[in-house]
Image 1 (cartoon, rainbow, N blue to C red):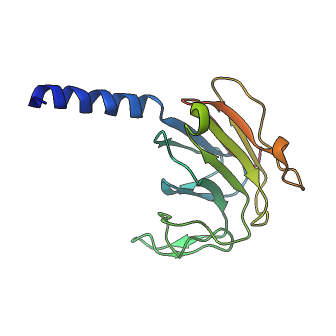
Image 2: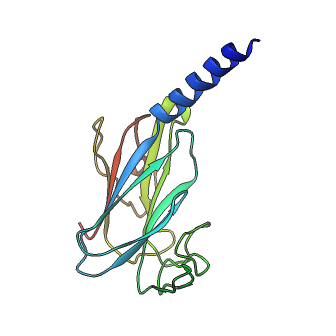
Length: 166
């Protein structure tokens, strides 16, 4: 394979991959500061009314976004949160510790569908809405028995809203 053919192939693969990425608009509607945690994605302090646009690559699975409360970080991004703490880091590299309300998702999975839900398995700390803002589908919600009707799908490439204190 020639260098130009290989370069063209890699460019097309990159374009396809980024085309199906999803943008999660994380918004804090709470009257207090919430530190969003995301794996993948890290973390972000959100004052009341602030948003954080987070782009997540197609093919991502086992991903989560969650609110953290009562946090205090130093200039290097180290500290602690009362709820949802992720090893004392502002930029989460692993899931938060309970209790925390979870927005869970997998992008471009089986039949090119995104799967998403809200889980209270790790407890509850902040009310949340998790919904598509493109390509239709209802809000995610939590059902105590976690049956098949509590997980939703959207076509790959859908963008989403995660709203704390809706």
